[in-house]
Amino acid sequence: MQTEGSLVTQPDRVPAIAPGTPMWKAVPPRLVGPYLDGQRSVLAGCVYRAQDVRFHSPAEAYLALSLGWEDSEFTPMMNELYLVCWLARAIDGYQPTTGSGAGEFYLEPIPIPVGAGMCRLGADGDQLVARYDGLAWHPAEP
Image (cartoon, rainbow, N blue to C red; front, side):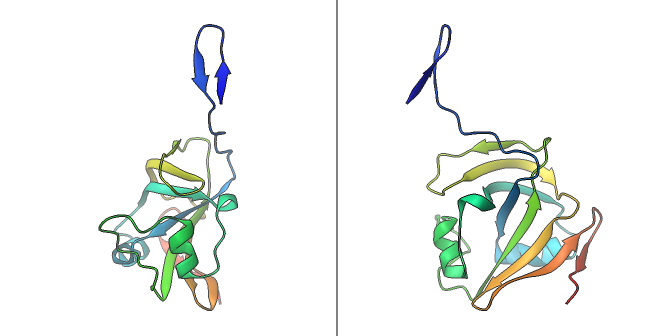
């Protein structure tokens, strides 16, 4: 469907991500440690609005987030999957992708937002592992 402008016809646009929108990014297994010990302090690449994808296990997340690209470290047989979750900010630059993932956006590198969480998704459900305070990740309270 096309939207007509005064002089130019432009394709419909995906709505912008509003500040405060819950977002997710799957973390490759080899990067979980570097994130949690402070060696990695940015988020970038494919991210998702939490409202657009639903999953309850690593296998469902693998499908919902289209994690099976060529040379992917993710597999549908993983016992656990880690996700960074945060609330979108007005200054973050989210660009819709043409990938197969529903609600998939490309994010240019940004510092990890204060308050972001690292979550573990396993067969037993999900749990918050750590919370980011702007300087370091801290273990979640049991």
